[in-house]
Image: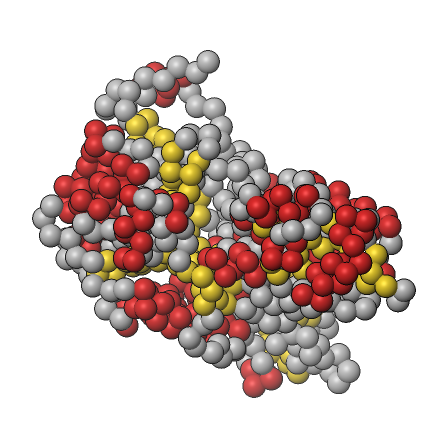
Amino acid sequence: MATFAKRTHTCGALRLESTGTRVTLNGWVDVRRDLGGVIFIDCRDRYGKTQVVFNPQNNADAYQLAKDLRSEFVITVSGVVEKRPAGTENPELPTGMIDVLADDVQILSKADTPPFPIDDSVDASEDIRLKYRYLDLRRPELQRNMMLRHQLYQLVHAYFNERQFIEVETPILMKSTPEGARDYLVPSRVHRGKFYALPQSPQTYKQILMVAGYDRYMQIVKCFRDEDLRADRQPEFTQIDVEMSFVDESDIRDLTEGLMQRVFKEFKGVDITLPLPRLTYKEAMEKYGSDKPDTRFGLELGCLNELVREAPFKVFSDNVKRGGVVGGFVVPGGASFTRNQMDNLVDFSKSLGAGGLVYIKWTETGLESPNEKFLGKELLERIATHLGGKKGDLVLMISDTWTRAYTFLGMLRLEMARRLSLIDETRDALLWVTEFPLLEYDEEEKRYVAVHHPFTSPHPDDIPLLDTETGKARARAYDLVLNGTEIAGGSIRIFDQTLQKKMFALMGIGEEEANRKFGFLLSAFRYGAPPHGGIAFGFDRLMMLLTGMKSIRDVIAFPKTASAVSLMDEAPNEVDEKQLRELHIRTV
């Protein structure tokens, strides 16, 4: 193998004070410019770019070889650092005040013409970029993202290490305990007909660690969920997983807020004010229509039940009497919307699943609504005024059950904010959402299911409700929300064996099934379990928001597509029949 001159500096290191120094750079040809007598190239590595000049008067051999250079060739180049002539400086580059006058160059590897330019203005489709991910990862934007991801790893490890947390690796091959999303299953060759599961989270293991006396655990860990994907989901994703013993909600909040304060200071230069705002689940739903509200804009919701309880408009009054909700919000300046725009909003609301959309326009000539004959002018004005409307505004209303009405209004609120560009992208809004419902009734399965997971502790005040009004019991659960995206969630756990069995029973999980799925955890509780709780951060989502990306695929080195396919290495793929026989599997 041919030898080559190893670099003395990276392509982002040289400055004016390096003038006169002889250097060697290793990297890729970013661009080549032949100005008819002098050839310029930008030599690139992950640290930056340096302009290299090939002048035949300085070294004819190097100049001749430079004629063969093309984009993405891998080279080593040597020469002397010189100050750029006046008027040729590039203030956009840290190295833009100097260049390297080359006297030696060696081509280490030639390259075909890439399927797209290696720059941030690339307009190639995402599928093409994912197929050639090794080229996409050369782009400055993705390299910055990967560097920031590395820095976040280091910050997280340092933060928890300073607070006496220990990092414990939990198994990747574990027992299947399906709750929520589907498990990824791994067949056992040795134990015919049996399967491991890839962990959806290390939940049971970290609780076992608390029983084992490791009172402060953390881990940056891979998790796996076989679920429908979207911009902020991947089949394999990274969590910052945390568990603590002898704590309550305030301890988890303080720890989390301290981490967020450090992250925002070091990554964005922003001092966040602590403590962070808090909303209960009920407050978040009734004010914003979401359990992960974006509070960077207004359009807050209001309840109209008392105003319309006796209204002749039966869609409203009958729903209120059945225990439902009539809610709405004001769109400032929305009275100018055209008939076509309003029809589009009605169609959008119906596409969400809402039965319809009732609206009021407060125009220069007065209040207008397609439902005016059912509501009357006086009630229209009372509704608009109650929600804070004024002349020139639009009022939007939906009538349904409590959950559906507020959920539809929340989705409509976000849609209006996007259409009217109301979201302040220059600031970040962090908040806690607390006191989630413990259980919710699944009509399809005809049983209660855990809103978070079956190990979440009920609120102490609500334990009596478990036997009488199960659906009203609150959980000791909490989510951290950033700009309308949940970035962390956790709870205080059940540590009492009797209460845990009761929770399983409420979910229709009998003693035999509970022992089959979670017997090891219930057994551990028999030997002295401490009070404990924790939280898990979505590392990829947090990175996406910190970098301003629209998809977590842009902050993961080798992501899957929306259909869970790796286009670069064509995973998943078929395997040899011999491998299937060894695993006792037959495809159909």
